[in-house]
Image (cartoon, rainbow over all chains, first blue to last red; front, side, top):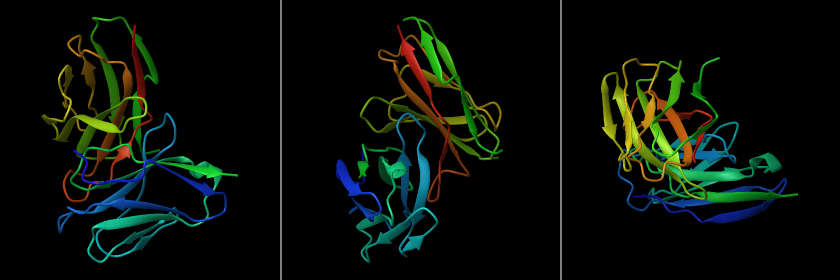
Amino acid sequence: DAKTTQPTSMDCAEGRAANLPCNHSTISGNEYVYWYRQIHSQGPQYIIHGLKNNETNEMASLIITEDRKSSTLILPHATLRDTAVYYCILSTQFYFGTGTSLTVIP
Amino acid sequence: DGGITQSPKYLFRKEGQNVTLSCEQNLNHDAMYWYRQDPGQGLRLIYYSQIVNDFQKGDIAEGYSVSREKKESFPLTVTSAQKNPTAFYLCASSIATGVRNEQFFGPGTRLTVL
């Protein structure tokens, strides 16, 4: 069963920031939030993870609310190659739900 | 290059035949996983292994079998008991299971049963 909920789909204009939300209201204290993305017909690719602090790497930023019940993945300058399905899962979870299908529009 | 390889990329089999999908990793990871993905759906866990010679059923293990004789290898057999085997199969590995388990995925094998 999924322990996270995400919107089914989102659009973003090329060059703008893409903000992808995820709710995980039943998260427990030692569970990390992980984000992956899957481009059509490929294996998912790890993006970023976090526990309670905000995190940033070369691909994205992760903002986790203070109560840890939700998070947002931020792609600061979306490109057409960022069009993919984005999955938010907890570290003790093996089920990847349907994720958010992000379409970057030229 | 370090990574996970799955072969073949496309596989066709006749109904009633067993088929084995290969998964190899050279990342020195202890944990390995098999997922199934159907069109428009998320990934569902078939089996996982935390260590050599040990594996656990996932959510949809019926009709599948695995072995973990070597750390690097985790082959999946789709048996004739699997009622709807046509799907995209993904193998992954991680340092370990549990609290922190960043998973690295292979390119997948698309199985079509005719």
